[in-house]
Length: 124
Image (cartoon, rainbow, N blue to C red; front, side, top):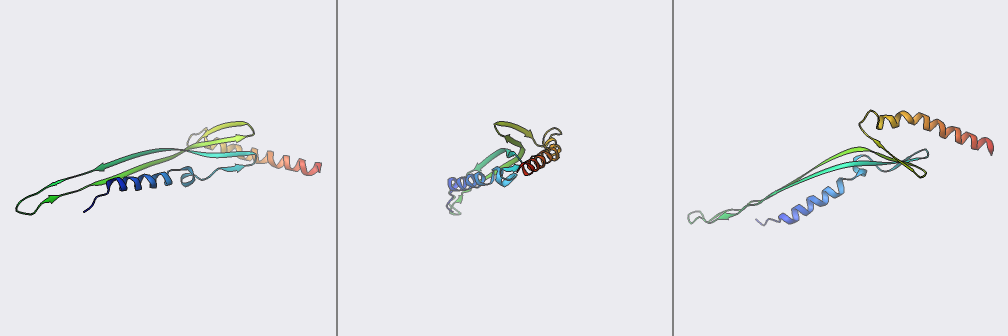
């Protein structure tokens, strides 16, 4: 039994790098009218590994060998970076004043966008 512990840890690490990003957790950047919204996540990772060895018994021909590895990832969306022009704000997710506050503002933002478009159409 040939144990490739380093290769196994590399594969686990590569998998975690590809999976622990905002695209796979909460989505890509999106536009909301004049606003650009970028999801922000918090990632925690843990690794563990083991090993083993053996010894030879004259009566049974020898015994031993063992290894193991594991990893865990905790991913949590924490909010959005929101930009408009040169202004940048951070809106927290999961807080009464955070993400819900952004969604409370959406109707006002949409209304302002519609008014601006209507103004432009009237002026043309």
